[in-house]
Structures are given as structure tokens and as C-alpha cells.
Length: 220
Image (cartoon, rainbow, N blue to C red; front, side, top):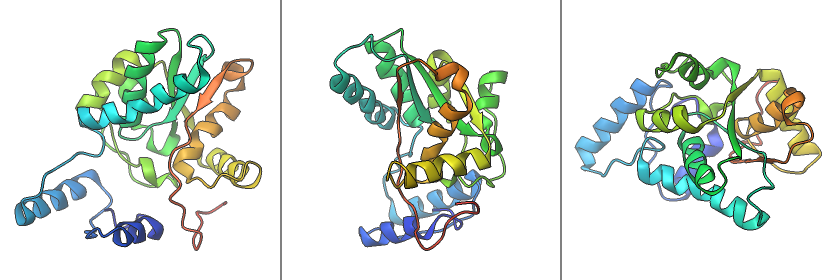
């Protein structure tokens, strides 16, 4: 786990019986630490998002959405946060199989816009410096997730840090939903791009509530 991860995430690993191994904030740091643990423990490696089984599992959220709404023509947009792309690619596959007309889009911080750049250029862009307050999506796409996203994703909307802060505060104070900033990107995008979403039936996937109440990012 990156050293700059919120303390609440570190504590939850330990509370649930995990052995916390910390590393630097970049992907290369994580991969190095992963290989070291693998060699010592001979443990099975399960990628957090660039794995087809993980992608399929995350795609079940789309199945639940359509089961609850009970009408495949009711949803115009499903919007999810994007980091490594597991949730987005899984949602894309499931949604397009159920309701091809439903658009699947993502929200991404401008300071971590590697997924956005990847779609624009057609090639995976490496991780940008991990400076966004959205710590849960400070990573780049994997080759498996990118291939799916490139084919099925209908767009990525960028939001800045202050817009994420505003959306997080709205979720906390008005809706009483405690989410981390990474999750609030979807509401930030809906508020910012009203011309796209206004008058449409939109499902916003709010995922991730690992908030350290002892520490809040600047602005929250």
C-alpha cells in the first residue's frame, strides 16, 4: 500500500487481519513491493483491476442497477469514477450487453487524467504525479481494462480539485453519505457538465467510503 494512503485504509487492512506492506506512491514502487512479497511468501498475485475475473466481478454492479430499475430503456447514462479502469470496463461490458443504448461514461480528476489522455491518443498514458486528493484513483489503466474502455466507453469527463471538494461536501452534508473524494468525482462531473446530463436519467455509481475523519484533505 502506498505510504501516502489515508490512515483509515491502513488501519482497515490491519483490523481485518492483513499484513500491511507500505511502498512508494508510484506504480513502479507498488510492483516492486509486490514482487518482493511474492518471492518471500510465494503468494498468489491478484491484480486489483487489470484482471478479467476482477473486471467481471465489478461489472455485476451494472446487473444490480438494471435489476433494481427494471427497465432497460430507463437509463440514459451510467457514470463511474475511473482510475485503473476495473469498475469502468466491467460496467461497460455488462451495460452494453443489457442496454446498448445506455451510455457508460467516467469521471476523472484533471490532475490524474491519464485515462482521458489514453482515450484521446489511443495508447495507455503512464500514471501522472500522484498529487490529486482523489487517492483512490491515483493510478493508470491496465492493458486489459484499456482495451475494453477504448471500445465501449462513451467518454471521460474531467473535474478539478475544487469541484471534487464541493461535490464531496454536498454528499456529506446534504445527502449524509460519507464517501471519499475519489467517489465524489461522479457528482462533480454531473454538476459541471449540466448541459450533458440535464433532463436525462443518470445513475451515478458512488463507490468508496474510506474516509479518515481525523484528517480531511484541504478544502473539505
